[in-house]
Length: 67
Ligand SMILES: [Zn+2]
Image (tube, rainbow, N blue to C red; front, side):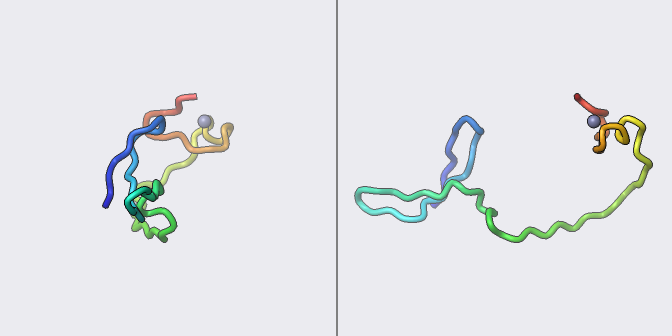
């Protein structure tokens, strides 16, 4: 059984792993925690780094940078 719990970090899915008449054991890890994930990625465009990106040492997204 799974349910959604709310906390300071937002909502998360909690899975009940064990219960008896006194205690309930829940697992708050993401359901995919510990699983190997495979992503199928397609490169749609390549561009040169901007001067800002080169000086910062990281990429800036489509909307520019926010720092
Ligand atoms: Zn930057």
